Length: 93
Image (cartoon, rainbow, N blue to C red; front, side):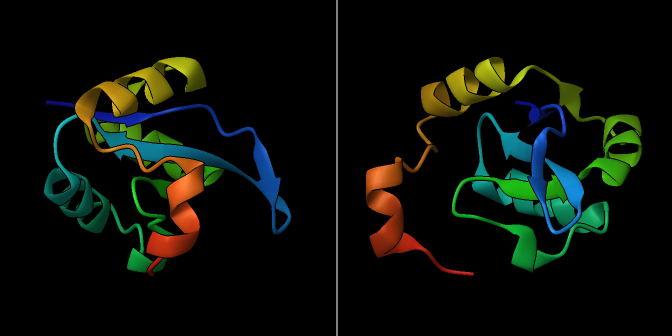
């Protein structure tokens, strides 16, 4: 079981963003995010969008830094990935 975070390289709202995921449990992901001050509104079905400035505290808190391809591979392998084609029907915040 691991919490994973990739590099902040997606621009939006004047900052760069990374993804935070769990490779085993959405409940684990929510608990980790809450304990590191990531707001619930940052959750996007199978991951949290996190700003670049949050990365040091997430890594210090135990998140494992991986590249974006590795993050995606491990999210898919976990069975937690929500494919893009399914997002329109399941998008809740």
